[in-house]
Image 1 (spheres, helix red, strand yellow):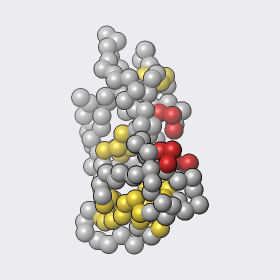
Image 2 (tube, rainbow, N blue to C red):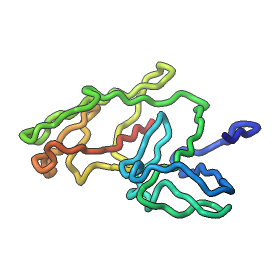
Image 3 (cartoon, helix red, strand yellow):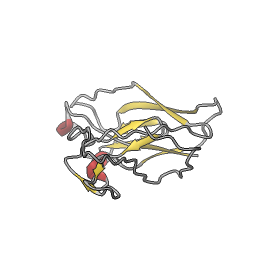
Length: 169
């Protein structure tokens, strides 16, 4: 564990690398664990393919730049936001979409709110790393719907579909 004398300020929508160096050369890793990305609170480790490699390492005491098999090397950070955070609630939380779902069908309703209880008055949109699954989905107000002008979901039945929703105030 590394402790710093005080918080390190960061900027939104900026990529940072958390790493350590061990002179004995051992690390813990889990191959393909970052294939789909990982989110924890306000922080996101994007899918490795979306950023040209995630989960980086280096075999010498230098900045890590090598990625292999979308591996997670379990270097975590403690993050405490300085202001309220946005919370996106989905209803249902894990929607299941039948292959027969019609274009325009509501997949889930998104309810954005601030952690301090103040109202969210901004807009929802698609963003990286997953964007909008080849146009399968669309946003209509606070509803995630099957895109009326998209390909539909018949070929995606019984698969996991990832989208990233961005809320802008």
